[in-house]
Image 1 (cartoon, one colour):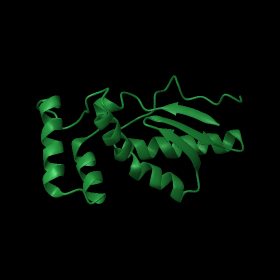
Image 2 (tube, rainbow, N blue to C red):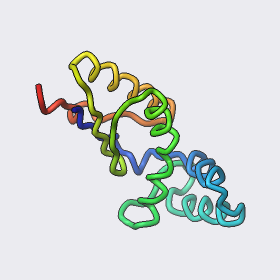
Image 3 (spheres, helix red, strand yellow):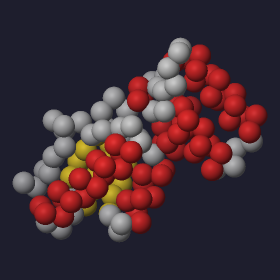
Image 4 (tube, rainbow, N blue to C red):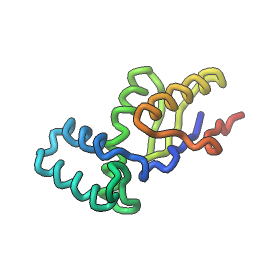
Length: 124
């Protein structure tokens, strides 16, 4: 099993990705617009970052990774995630490295990366 954490997760979530995720969930357009406007108030002139700590932020953070989760499932990767913490289940070290590279690439496509010092396989 691999345990890994996304680096600076909340501060690096793009508002556009949150907006797309909300639209995909069929959230009413006026609600999506208001959520994005609130996020822009918190982040100032940049178009990324979620406030840390509130339940609404956690929900937005969770849905922002739905597309990555879908890609992992599509590859048959067994995993569980809690916000920005992934547990990836593997049968060998080779498989672990392959899964970790796959996840890293998909996160990179979302403007995210794994914390280098926290990626670990507790079983060796």
